[in-house]
Length: 220
Length: 416
View 1 (spheres, rainbow over the protein chains, first blue to last red):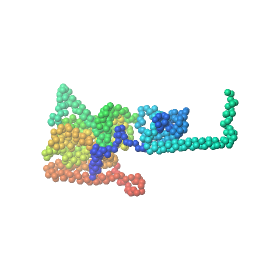
View 2 (cartoon, rainbow over the protein chains, first blue to last red; view 1 turned 90 degrees about the vertical axis):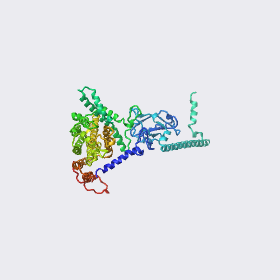
View 3 (cartoon, rainbow over the protein chains, first blue to last red; view 1 turned 30 degrees about the vertical axis):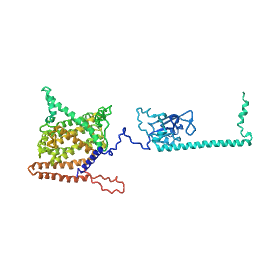
View 4 (tube, each protein chain N blue to C red; view 1 turned 135 degrees about the vertical axis):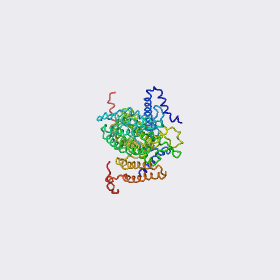
């Protein structure tokens, strides 16, 4: 009969009405600014630059290689290389970014910069409350704003950060091993040279005596 | 308690006495107008918040709970929302489409709101509390004035020069004209029994005590109950409330006939719709639910106006409840319901009223069973034939999976 379905529906909605007051499980709404849902580990918003140690600018892993700048599909990264070099985590002399800007209003969160970075330097951040009154300057962030510590990275993406650290340790170990090998090779070469010098004539290394020979020619 | 019951009447009399005798009738009229213009829009403001909150609860949401007193942490559980909405609609730009018929477009919201206020003025909202007491024609005046809303809907839809507006207006006209008939026929039963078109007389007739403890409201009779349900359904359609909100179907027609209205004119349409709902609820209360009278004699000490507004709030809550429950009808279903179900039931109800009138001396039980059988039997038969139309639609070409049974073509539907 007409009306029975209506009554059934009315009962159902009445259950909802009363249930929302008695049963907290029914109200699934999270009242956002006060309540927050924990972010999932795969959350990603915009990139940031990782630094090690205490000083963000000194510990920045970025070497201004500009791969990310070239790969960025919407071209939201702008890098200017430094004039001087400094020692990086592997103990190699590297450039560092004099300017590193990302325009968040252009960034499309594709994570390609993270994929291509060979130095584990750029990673995705989870901060999403980035609204600003200044839509041009407010969303153009420089390297000081971008720099975030490795501990921050560990907090937001623990698994990924651990993997990143492991990769870096591997690199470091490789570099150390290579340096050691180099030193050993150098020592070996030196030893070989040292062993070879007594038998070979002094002409075997003609470069070395030359300056010595040239020296007397110079007017003193 | 009689003083509390008549507090507004005596207050008005005393206020009027302050003026010279020449001005007194005008001041009296003005006071009534001010009261109606203050109370019902106030209820409207409250209703908008309550509706949003309740609809949310019906859908397991918390609803608006933010807006409170500005610059403080007081949130009033969201009941400041109506002020925010009002300020928003007042300060928004009033856009008139370039191709619109400017004059008609301007007049349409007023044609909706003014009759709504006039319709509210004939309601007996308490003992001796009727602003416009027509001794012979109260109900007639109500329906005559109520018909102006159709005009407003079509004016708005036509003058906007917008396809959605026009579609909404056409639906609105078809729906309102169709449902006007069951509305009037179902209220005619009360007029037949009482023998008066005056709403005040109709309410007073329902205050007579039956079996020593309850007032003989019309809804406590078989014809009154059927008439009440029919009236309620038709009232839903007249007030454009769900499930009959086709004229402003948001999901199909943007906003229906007031698509092209913004700012304060939109707010006026909104107000007019709600005032129309209050007015028609008030008439339903006066016709079937005993107006300002208490249900039981031992509750007579509660002031009469409190009973009226209590019943009005109950109606508003019920309409909100319905809105939170029922989906919208299709146009053909809407028309079928009006012409093939409600109209026959209304005519049958008129017959039952006649039977009830002429069997007044019969045994009460026999009289009740006769009237009940006369109403329930055809109701069952009508709904059987009617529900055959309400089967879920099957689409021949949409059922693409081979597992789906081959469906015979749907029997041709009767066009509206």
